[in-house]
Image (cartoon, rainbow, N blue to C red):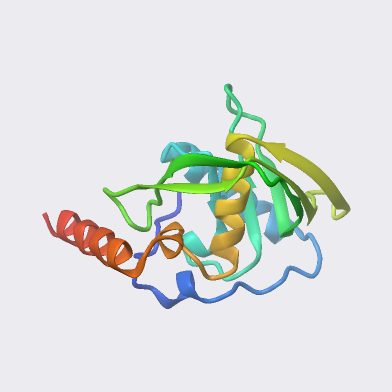
Length: 166
């Protein structure tokens, strides 16, 4: 089991779009495995490669009641999103100690390259959909606080920095 460290919120890799993955290689599979170990150690329901300093468009999501259902995604993109929104308290290990209620589409259809190297379209609903969208934001160089007003974002970033200094 390899649990990788999280990069801090101020690291530019979190705020820069990640590079597309051309093919699924053994290295990509090993990164996914490390990401799943790291996600499970948080514990969390999703992780994007930039959160651990890898600038590739890789994400994992497991919002199942029992662990072991992780979906491995390369180059995920939302094809369709529901009009109905779902609020959820979101957080990130890159910004420890704080969270915010974010509204996102309740359901999404996502296209991605799966662990077999095949293009897959999959529907996600509820917490699965929230987590997938959260991870895609990371791959696009965004953090959940980017959905907040500038003042609220500044307050949460400052609070997290203060808590980290303790």
